Length: 251
Image 1 (cartoon, rainbow, N blue to C red):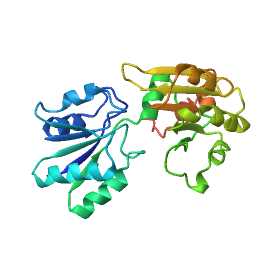
Image 2: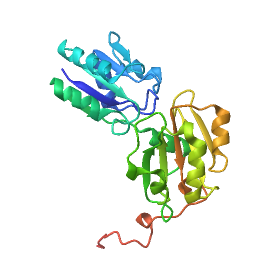
Image 3: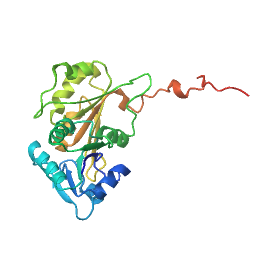
Image 4: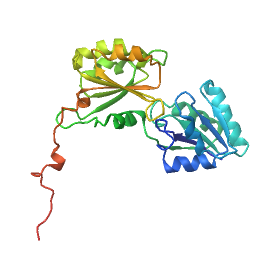
């Protein structure tokens, strides 16, 4: 039997992949992050599946559930919010499965930052303005950030920032980022993207903290920062320019 790590996407039941839906429909056991997941996603599970909410479980308990199911001859889906490549604890879980001799694989999902950008209707890489996206997080009650990954280092590039786990530190982060982007830089906060209770807040580094605090946001939000969020800042890329040589041969 196999443990399938599956990206659950941003939360909407119809934003998982066809492969993810198939795996959920066949698995006898599904472990899911109840904090970040719309319960409708679990409608893809088969009727007799054992559903385990992991929001109150530690790594030992989660591992024990997966290993136990494997040894009982039961396929397992381990749902991860967004995409397993970002902040999913994939490495630490799979290393334990390797040690226990349990096979596993990974199915990607729609990451939260992509869902947030879609809801905003914004491209995060605008020609001649910014061509890079930085995916990072803030540190509060979480693992210490590497010394080389201070937010100021990323902000100095003026790339589009996608901040995870940052919503409770919005005010201090806005002050820090203003030194690099300017207080009038556009900011968007998207909480529970694509879920029934989704919330979108638009503002600038000068006023976003007041709006976030007024909304009472505490978790499950992505903070996007950068000039690419300004709908008035648009440039046309060389890719589609009529003057570009596309290598077409005349007949």
